[in-house]
Image (cartoon, rainbow over the protein chains, first blue to last red):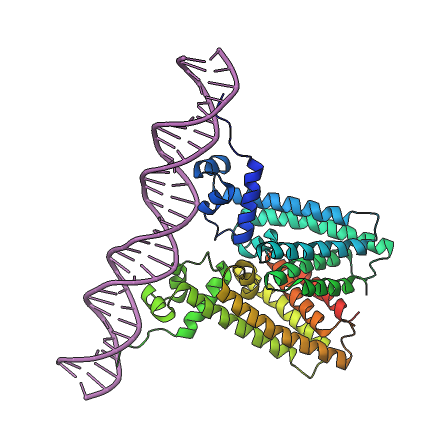
Length: 199
Length: 199
DNA sequence: CTTGTTTTGTATCGGTCAGTTCAAAATGTA
DNA sequence: TACATTTTGAACTGACCGATACAAAACAAG
């Protein structure tokens, strides 16, 4: 029928995620996207319509993957809920330490980065982030309620507040990491945060 | 001797702070800076050398003002240290609620925003932020030690960890605010964070 | 008033931005 | 092999980027 694509759309999307993650939306040029994906300009625009549309798809893909990963850790019903929360924080710390060792600098979280860079003036990005935050807060709330039931989380605060606190703690870890904090410092933050859940 | 300036350099700097705060470094054009400050291009470049140099001065000015304000709250020796920490968090929450009511959206913190946007690839910005973080952590550490002495902070964690945790909490509040959290949610986060200090 | 010095507005610089155009290349089908 | 359809690469578009050139304007000192 027609000439077939010479590239895998999902692989290209992953490459785009990585560039946006490293450089942010504004600082990433379409040329950067061509270089990172290995695609020509025509293929990029033919497949993804515009830089902004590509960013939306990249962000959605990142948020989905991240939330799936986090949910897997938090839904492990074998362990006490507090342990699962600890595991989530460890995952974040590990992720930051990992990419710091790999590329020399911490990347933080594309979600957090985009909240800071774009949420205030890009309604499409804000909507994606808002939807993801709602979804993630629900998972956080559930694990807090489970923690109250299994006795591993003894805070008297309601699950909603604890979920918000966990969300803020993850963001705080990410920013601290980008600000230069090393693994030991991030672990200290995570452990201290746990004290608010199990005093 | 020569023609005098028709503008106040510090007022121009404040306008630049505001514009960088709202839009970030990359998304702010030199034209935006002209509009915000009311200066012509010549005056901007004649006074501040370059967009980047202007940003450095704006960032330094912001960080100084912010740290001075926070230090004033945390050094109020009349009150128990835990109350001072609570007051600091209230100040952050209040600041976010304020600018949300004013401009319709939360601005977060120029320091946090710059950590996220630039710290990884702009050594000059990273150095300013690093210097400020060290300075602020020292103040945080001092108030944690005071809290242990006056008995208002009962956590057994060392002051360094508590200071890092407070720093991360402030960043988490800022990001949560930019992500859409309202005053009540921010207050819940702040109160929950306090539980880690005075369990 | 002139002179020397600085600021200011305007016009402009080369470069890069996101995005388009278009013809050549590459396929499945007939 | 010839055709229809799509992808691909390269050249190109107008707009905007940060930064500069330069002369008119505005002052203080003499």
